[in-house]
Structures are given as C-alpha cells and as structure tokens.
Length: 85
Ligand SMILES: [Zn+2]
Image (spheres, rainbow, N blue to C red):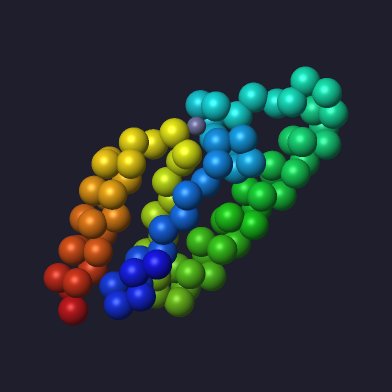
C-alpha cells in the first residue's frame, strides 16, 4: 500500500483468482473449485469497489506478470496521483 498516494496493490494468484491465462479447473471437484474461485473474484470486485469509492487507485498484479512490469505500473500510478495534488 502506498498510503500517501492512495495506491493499493494486490498480487493475485493465477489459480485462486481465476487468471484467464492460467486458471485451469481442477480435474476432480471442478464444481467445488469453480465456486470458490468465483467467490474470490466477487470478493476482489467488492474490495476494488470499496477502495475506489474511498479514493484509492487499485492495481491488481497477476502471479504470472513480470515483477519489473508490475513495479513500473505501480510507480507510474503513484507518480500520476502525486502530480494531481
Ligand atoms: Zn496467470
């Protein structure tokens, strides 16, 4: 969390958060896992909504994203927000 700039960063696991590229349903109990992942995604969306309403920028980084690219996105967002005030 970058408290001053109000930028919240989440690192989402590909399986648990239903990454479009890497989430493959578990072979057994597919329904059970799918339901858990759907609930996670709903919770993520709710978290994003609450933070956005409170004036935060939300950045979600997938587990598979390159750390450099993710760091750049965060730095860029922090810079943009600082420039606005
Ligand atoms: Zn992924």
